[in-house]
Amino acid sequence: MCCAAPITRRRKDEQTKLVAVTVSRGHYRRRYGRSPFVGGIQRGLSDRRVPSLRIGCGGLTLTTKVIGLLGLVVMLAALYFALIFALADALQGAYYRILYFHIPQGILSYAFVIVLGFASVMYLAKNDMKWDRFGQCAAEVGLLVGSMSIASGMIWAKPAWGVYWAWDARLTFQLLLVLLLVAYLMLRACLPNQEKRATLSCAFGLLAVIDLPFNYFSIYWWRTQHPSP
Image (cartoon, rainbow, N blue to C red; front, side, top):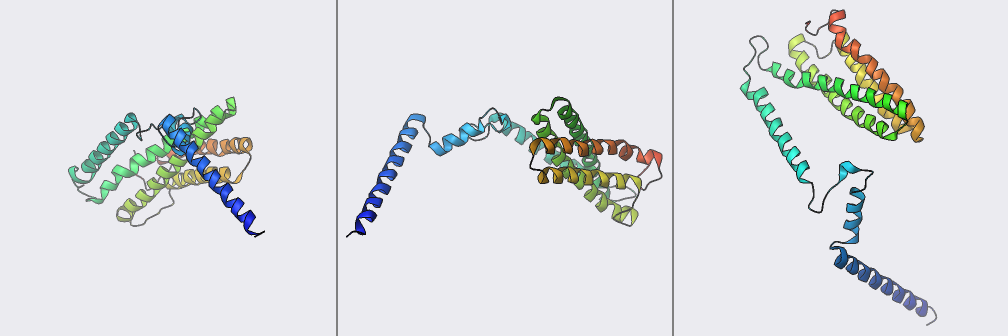
């Protein structure tokens, strides 16, 4: 009996807490029209600190849906023109179509590295963490498209050159660019101090920018496997 009393009291306390939580959730739902869990998520997503993640009660906003739909339509149209509409090359046949992906990927890798360099300079000048986050986003996308440009170039190089990889200047500098972006992201993952991480990351971001002119003008300065202008 002595042991049963505390257990019974504990069960009553748990039941009282459960009823209190149920009543509070029902009151919140009747007042705000949604559960406290969903309401907390919506308040967090609509916080001013993350304006790009604002999501209404109905899911994605209309602007986001329209942009996504237009992007899908443009992507399908590009695939049609690149893979079906364009005629086969007289010398290379059909495998030249990979260039419709390889060249834009290379251009995008340049563009995102320029954005990374701009964000690095702005952070060093203003010491504002938003530029650090902006540079990180640019580095991640730049690494993705840069790696894709190397992979698509290797696919094209095998039937065109007979090898997947040739250590010419353009390929070497593009590989160096990708490795600098990898080092940038690895450094950010290893340093816990936010300000120190942002400052040291700017060094790798600026090094990636320095790589760009050598990368672009390599076909003018050296004899490479890439077609000369």
